[in-house]
Image (cartoon, rainbow, N blue to C red):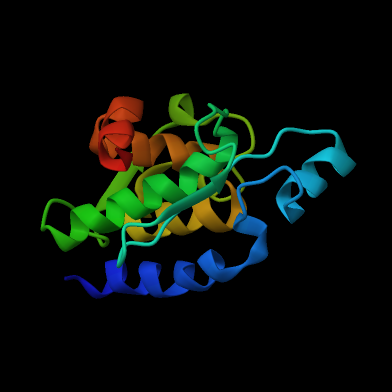
Length: 149
């Protein structure tokens, strides 16, 4: 098992012990949702036991920028399988830039960015062009959906 997968399980495991994952209407997550007036959905899987817990875990929610961490995880999984390289340079043009691209806007042209830098820009600064460049590397939203499922 690649170390990256084991690390993810290790980091997420303590969340399963939190009372916030109680599936009743009085859970802290339900209270947080009520108090703030929004919709909150949480789903977690204990990969060791297969236990699933959540709050409104069966409802659909828009991912917005949260897809970027999943996309970066997919890139890393592809690296683990030998299908991608973190040092691969990705060259892009002004036409590829979209709104809010604090990192990628400074690297348009022949030098581009490495896939590692693209992942970092997407995850740490929510760089939208970096998110699109990750999508392009694995077949877009349908590729990401297949990975997540």
